[in-house]
Structures are given as C-alpha cells and as structure tokens.
Amino acid sequence: MRILTIDQIRSVMAVAGDFRVFVEVCLYAGLRLGEAAGLQLGDVNFLGRSMSIARQVQGATHKSAHLVAPKYGSERTVFVPAELTSSLAAHVARMQLEELDEQMFRTELGRLWNRNNASAEWRRIRSEAGLSDEFTLHALRHTFASNLIASGCDVVTVQRALGHAQPSITLNVYSHLWPSAEDRTRSATAAFMLVVADSADSLRTGSGKAQVNSVP
Image (cartoon, rainbow, N blue to C red; front, side, top):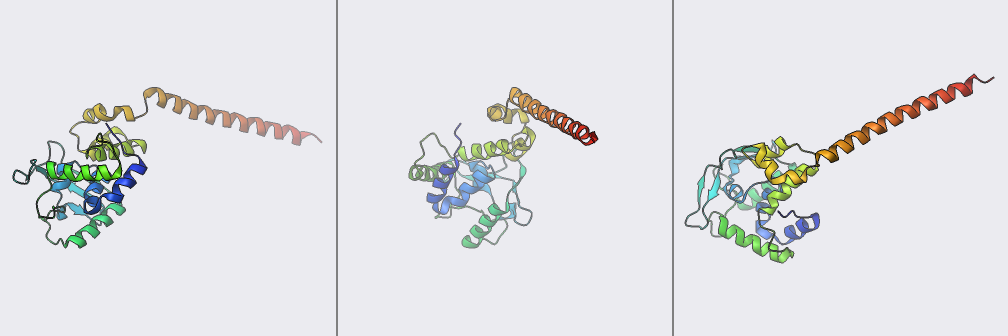
C-alpha cells in the first residue's frame, strides 16, 4: 500500500491538468476509479456538501465501458468539504453541464473514463510528478482513508466513507494505520496520570497557602 505525502500531492495537482478534478474526487472523497468515472451531475449536492455514489463504470476499454450499479454494499453518501464542491462547481461551469444525468467526467472525445484510459492518464501524471510506479491511482483512495484515520475517525466512519460492505474489510486493509491497543492504553493512562498529578498539586498548593495565611 502506498500513501501520498503532502508534497507528493502538491506535485500531482501541479501536473494533473484537465484530469485534476477527477484526481480530487478520488483523493478527497475516497472514490474508486470506476465510481469517479460514473459520477453524474445529479449525484453532487453542492449546498449539502455531499455526493451520492450510485453507479460505476465497468470495463477496461471505451468499447466495453458501461455504467452499472456500484459494488455490493458500496452505495453510499460521502460528505465532502466545501472546497471540493467549489472545485466541482467550477468544473461543471467549465464543461457547461446542465442535465442531471450528464457524466461529470468524460475524455476529450466524449467517452467514459475507464480502467485503461484513466490509468494511462494517471501514469502520465505520476511520471511528471516524479512518483514511482508503485503509486497506482488507487493510492489516492488509500491516502483518503489514511487521513481519516489520522484525524481520529473510527472504523465504522471510515468503512461508510469508503463503501466497504463490512467493518472487517476496512480493518483488514487499514488496521496497521490505527493506534495499537498498547498505544491507546499508554495514552489513556498517561492522560489520567496527568489529571491526577494536577489535582494533587492543586491540593498541595492550596494547603500550603492556607498554612502561610494562618501565621500572624
């Protein structure tokens, strides 16, 4: 599993070009390649700052690519920041999208993005950004998940955001990113000890002051 650093993300965005917004929904909403390719205008709630994952593109070539339902259990609503919906709104205006069932993303030839052409575009970006071949397009989704975990989100929250059918799937993939039970035990006890120590210091200080004040 590869997770992009902040500097690597900046490098990717600098060279992404017209593919940048596609990259953003994978990175900032955790969409799979097919889900991003299947996103339609009506799926984005710009005021509510969310997007519905209701379909995906299946197929590796422009001839075989077609829209299907998401993977089992992957239908979901993803809550996204205003910065992402603003980026999407600018994309909609630039592409002059009007109908709710219009695809958010299409190639210059008006075709659906699919596993082959989207991966090829990512390879261009990866090369220009100086990333190794180990960074696939799916690394954007891993980076999204990593950020949620680092920000303190629990496994169920991450599971729902990623569209995993069960929390166990999320744990199987990302368990190493969560603090271990030992780490949590140490942190919780350390915080507890500090509270106790602060309370004891307050009592000693208060007692000392009382003794001083009692002296004529």
